[in-house]
Image (cartoon, rainbow over all chains, first blue to last red; front, side, top):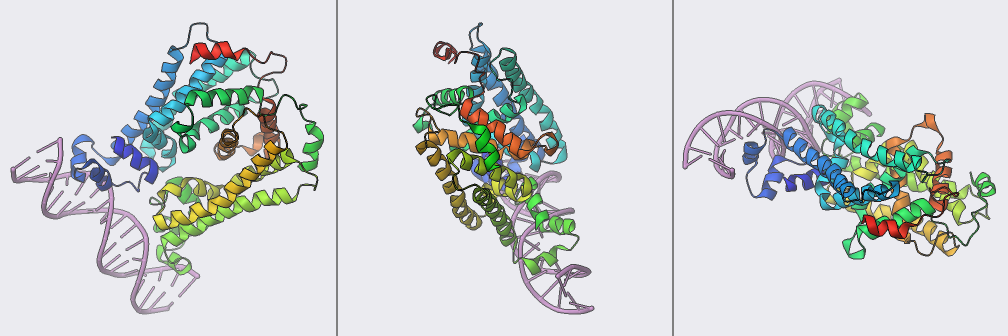
Length: 199
Length: 199
DNA sequence: GTCTATAGATTGATAGAC
DNA sequence: GTCTATCAATCTATAGAC
């Protein structure tokens, strides 16, 4: 139920009543119970759809890679894959991202288990980057991970398809992530002194 | 009401009932109406406290800077300021970040106006970085902005004070942001070919 | 498959005692 | 400032007609 996903995502679990969902769908609230046995089951299906869509979408981008793709290629594929999933299945993905803490215990536990596939997927991507030598030794891998995922998940709140494609955004992000935002012409900053003065 | 903030943040606006808040506070639901005239007023106060705490906290970090601080110093001050605000006033800040779409229209409009101070603050920081030459010309300032804020706002979900201070995390982030995650020993990647093959 | 009607529980909020 | 008691509205879910 696409409409339910949108409502859950924006209004929250409890605030989204069966009546409002039914209104949006042009039917009566009671009719929903022919398709879903309870509100819990409905939100569970919506959440699972969101989780599965994201993982599947990323895997499709992986499979489109040439066999000799390196860790950076896979990194970009995961990046574009998850970003486009967030845009394409926006309502489901948003529900999936924002509803976890609001759910009844039984549903929440099931969803946490489903997240593990997604977590594992990104762990592999970052481990490969490091073992293939694309990450500096002095950078914490867990930090760069939240760094990247924090960015990706914010995409839903600002992406405007009129202002550029996801592929271009991913390219800019990858450039920024690997090469940094500082201009090459400027010396690499005498940071030590500045930092101790400002902290 | 600190307890109300936590409940609003985790359960959402509608799901947080006056009775549950009262339970947590050890009083009866009716007693809340002596302090706040309605549930809307209560959530409005909580949200305003969150917004104000963050802006004020960042400004305190600004004021602690030496007079000759440059744009990068101010960048780090804003970074640490907002991160520590998110940790320190976690419940208020979380409520402030997640409740916007769930609120009744009247409350939501007021909160959106309050956000503008915060937006303006970061706009200034990034504009200064660019005019002082700390950002590459080929990087979109709006993109680097969501990049940074996406990271900062994710701090609440993973920060563990036992594993490192916010100041160290900010340092690592700044290094990664300006200098990039790629090791200096490796050539700056022959990306052009890889990209066209993988997209 | 969708409807009307309604049961039973819970909600935000008020009145009035202490 | 907090309580008990209660109201009107709204919620999820069910029963049974069509």
